[in-house]
Length: 298
Image (cartoon, rainbow, N blue to C red; front, top):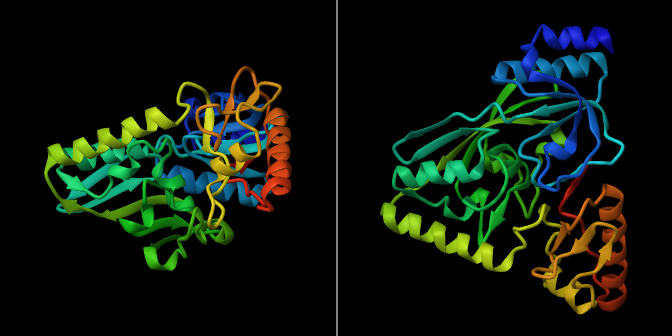
């Protein structure tokens, strides 16, 4: 792989390339073994060239933003982790905001509030990036990204940059057509609404208080672990199955909110996976409902 490393160096500055980098440093779960390469492009051009290099060289690669909805394996990743954290530009014109894929949703929401624009308050407490939120159609408290998203700029599998309207993305509950098409999100545009800055900030604080009250923010996690089953709430099903506080190794079903699996103490990915398998089994036996993971697996 020495030749591949040199080719990476022709695209990226040396400080943007790390080798054998623990993924535990780059996921909110604080779990994960070493990635062969962890790269952090500073521009969309560098990201596009790196992705195409991986494709040409037949090297496995995976795009990561804030790592907030990701469980990385204990054995690590034998390929390239392509981080969008260096792509954080944000621009507001009138009631429109455009943001690069690596910008944290919390920062995007703060920028919207600063410009007295409403509609993005729901995203202020979601611990992810714009790119990941588009891919998953992230949402909270009755709102989803598709409510404000207007267009997305993506890199396709041929290295071309496409601009797609939100209606072309097939946005649904925690899903879009982006993964199946092999697209990489570069930038997104949002249509917001002029409002009162203090009211917008007040709504953001109200939602933040709800999160602090109901969610286990004191422990590492990947957010909601399971998708919401039709007609049910995952946390309620898990609680009804008698699994509040259930532990496997260092992984635990949160005692504060059963919809969250937390890294209680030095949990491994194997701990989390075994716990999730047992949770799914017991919920299925107790209620007949099949839970589906919301967390992505690397």
